[in-house]
Image (cartoon, rainbow, N blue to C red; front, top):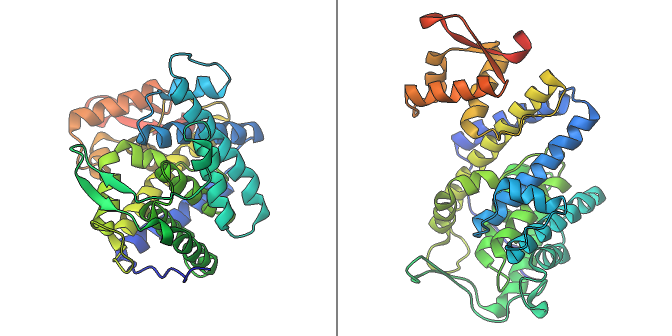
Length: 351
């Protein structure tokens, strides 16, 4: 058994405030009244989005609609490798759905299983579900080495130490914080020949599921990383440094992760609120984090004006906001009322 991993980080006031907001959203989602069939739909939508986002981070070219098609059994023929990535990731998510019901802490073998499921048919058989045997390097677009992982002979002990730590974290460290650290450390150990990023993201979801903090499998964290893939890698590398070293301050990564978790929770709550209002299938249009902020405000206060939208999204131009609001009206989420300077956008339940 390896020496237990001991993370170094500070919980910033920003992170504390965001965790409090996540807790509030979690309570709202848990208390929402959605028909059972809508819950199933929400989970399926989350699965498709998660498969699409996580594989796209690694360069998978399939669109969200194509991923949906593959998962429904309709192959695309010209993208065999990409289709295998998609099906594999879905298999790994299915494993998570079953495994989290055990309520047993995440184990070392779970990490190997997740990797094997995600990389089956993409790596040589002897490399799937098996630790790497050589050194590993992360390079940039110019093939310049940005990060060097630990030597292969230390990998198993470091994974065992991480697994030991996360067991102690259950009940003593907030699930969002523990998930952030698990994600970071797995990506930093880089234990496999390939597929480390997707395995780290899958293990994060398994940990949250075991803790009962995955919003019933409907929260999608990977879309936040996929939307700004550069920021995702920057946040990791900022704490990693040039080579593996324990004792680095993980606070910047923790802050990044918690902000992403809150963004994802807001999007989920907007979708849940819409479902509760309509009690019918959601529109096919994806809701992004800006849409979620607008809809959450409109849901809370009954309506939103253009100037109020400017207040909650100060970095967006007035013209862009007008377009966003128009799209939300066109999609049936909001209703435009009034004229000229008195225009408001009413939450749909207020019609």
